[in-house]
Image (cartoon, rainbow, N blue to C red; front, side, top):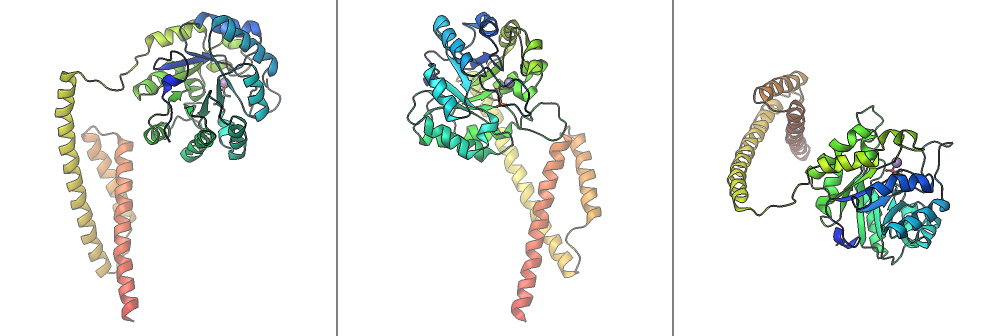
Length: 365
Ligand code: PEP
Ligand code: MN
């Protein structure tokens, strides 16, 4: 796949691209009070028209009526809006009201039938489609949804990272699992990746730190829910920020350069990267030595008919290695993960040794 680069989206899109506006469009007055103060400071505006609510009985959006308010705002203010669509009927209405940017919500991305229907209804469209990650952490489903649009000739695509549902109580509304969007980006480097700190954090105090984290990780843009009176918003009240607060957050963010060609910087990088290369080589040599010793110990266990896995040794390894790691200022979870992986591999290697012996016995019988 070769996705059009971010610049293709609108007339003059900068990086990071800022998408902002209310979670839901509630009235023409609410819309204009929420967006007018940020015209010129934001690249694309957002507003939910049809709201996918987890439980029935909550505000489900204003529907077609709100599209008219958006159409007016686009014309009056010379701006571009994005709305969420979940059915071909939504697509038809959005296109009828001059929308050039659509997004697919997290609850829709999970359903390939739904995504296929949407992709077919947009066949050959030259607008932009942004696909939010599915509710659960599955990279292939997210990629699959993007592919379905691409196959229908839509090549202005983007991905929105809005976090993943977690049954456990966590500090986020939706767990970020940063590795998943980064894996998507490394597989599809040209695909613009947008972070939605509002739905990840679920709280307005978390917008700034999550946005900065995304910029540190080289994201292409941010989507931030903005409402003129967040506490009285009809949906996602806790996580929306006022237009003024948005301006403040944006002013305090540090955009990072994707690359830097300054010679002094490059020289410093080269020296340290060489040291890292050496450290990695030594790490691999130590690993090879360890895994050799694992085979040796496996042979002795096998000759003495002793079980491969001994819980006491396993516990001792975990205890001593995390303590050694601590003395070296290494993160405890990191050391634990590493040794879990090493131990897994040791058991695997020794199991293969034992299997080999079984096969030999069978063949000799
Ligand atoms: C939204 O953007 O308002 C929304 C409903 O998001 P999500 O699909 O990420 O839950
Ligand atoms: Mn919302």
